[in-house]
Amino acid sequence: MEGPRTSGRFKANSHTNSGHKQGRKRQGGKARKCVCLPVDYKSIQFPIVWSEFRTNQQFCDAIVRCQDDAVFSIHRVILSAVSPYFRALFTNSLQVPGKSEKSEVSLDTAPGAMFSLILDYAYTGTCNVTVDNVEQLLPLADLLEVLGVVQLCCQLLIAELKADNCLGIYKFARHYFCNELESKSRKYIRHHFTEILKESGEFSELTCDELRSILIDDDLNVWNEEIVFEALKRWIENNESERKSCLPVLLECVRLGLMSIQYISTKIVNWKLVQESKKCQKLLRTTNAHLAESRSRPRIPYEIIFAIGGWTGGSPTNFMETYDVRADSWFVVNTDVAPKAYHGLCTLNNLIYMVGGYAGHQYFNTLCCYDPIQKNWCERACMYHARCYVSVCTHGGKIYALGGSNGRERMNSAERYTPERNQWDIIPPMNTRRSDASAAVLKDKIYVAGGFNGFEIFQSAEVFDVEANQWTYIRSMMNPRAAPSLIAHRNDLYAFGGFDGSVRLTSAEKYNPNQAAEWQQVADMINPRSNFASVVVDDMIFVIGGFDDYTTITYVECYDADANEWYDVAPMNLNRSGFGACVLLGLSNAKEYSYLSKVKNCSDAPGQSSARTCD
Image (cartoon, rainbow, N blue to C red):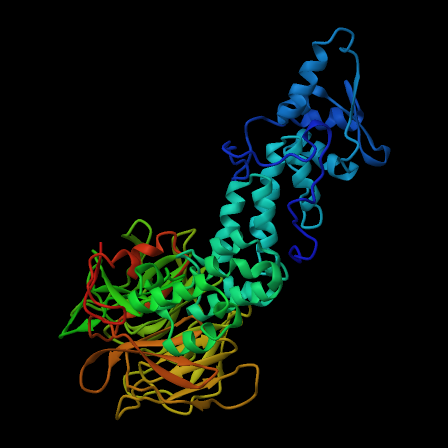
């Protein structure tokens, strides 16, 4: 289903009013209870007989007349049960002498089709809310105080939030007091701001106050502050004569202390409107001199890397740390999970799952689940087989555990876990026995590449078609790789590093399954590594830790696929290999895993990797 469009949709003033509520505005100083919470409105019951009365027009005691002479026979008591508006209207009419007979209500500005949907809800408890009618239906439901329909409308709008309509929905929600919808849309705007700049036609229609509230927010998800400045510049230049007076208050939202001096001097200082504003000049001088805290603190990251467990100093560890991409810093997280190495790690529904692993003399078939909100671990159903050096991925709401070693043999068996049933199921085995391989999901298919069978290191790779329930070989990689990292990014699979039987590798290659071509070489990593982790954050591929032929390492680097270049990133706090890393998005408590929650206890500048503890 196509989502709501922005052009002409969800305007705060495009509502239907009637009677004494015409042109109602938000009243300052009066808080109205939100009625759009995404739960069922169950304050009344909806017997089937009500629909029968309506269909057969039995016992009707009132008429409602809408636009285009649409007339509806209704039951006053039923409408009164779902609408305080009608309850007050009919109660008053019954108290007037001579008004107890069948009465008529005029809703001249209400579309008949929309009022028919209101009646559907009144008699059945539900109605057909769609992206085509919600813009008319919600204002009418709000006017008539049919809270259940307001909730249904808001649930649909929350589900339909997109970069090209979220600004309109945000304004729409504010006008109709839908606090939950307003909160959800505001959160969506901050987390998808860069996409909105590219796709939304309503960005230029924001007011100065609305734009300021977005740009100043710690939760604004932007790769760098240059994006913030370019956004306000674009907004002002859209109507320069009227908006240039907003420049000083908007420039205060830009965290100049996080920008390069070169960018400030060439792009900001030289902008004509900045040069003409004494307030902007003063702001720039103050920031350059003192780097005020509010202008230099990193924003809260939308994506957070979690690195858990691994092998270090000759033994397994339960060490957990998180990476704040905005501050380029790693932080230690207290955890009570058992020490493990060579396990699989993945995320599902913003929970972290640790699959299998090894602890010196024990091979595990366990599944442990970490809740980042509650900050606790719990045991889930065990696998059929113990697995270390296991390849793990998620697809279709399920966790896949592929191959690995049980301590006696390398396996080709595979199984998948369904969280709702807390149960593992056996799926067809891979064509090749593989431990020390790596798995990734691309275009609804599961790929496994490289690995080791106890005698041979593989170049081969294979794919599992979930629909066909079948494994098939694909083109082999350019190099044999044991303990590499396979990761999907955009339309390609990337294979990094690993061990070729002689040395740990820096080499990397990519493969596009939609093209009948060989794997292609890409830029080498800076550091050789095997038994490491890789994730995608901010459209960049991060490779983390591992073993470099001599020792376990802390080194982290990231790959820009557009530039085909690698860049250094702040190292982890603990050198380790055989660990897992994953990314969680949009955590409600993301600040607790970020630099902002540690800044009071840390004297180091962002980018330094000295241990900082998350309680």
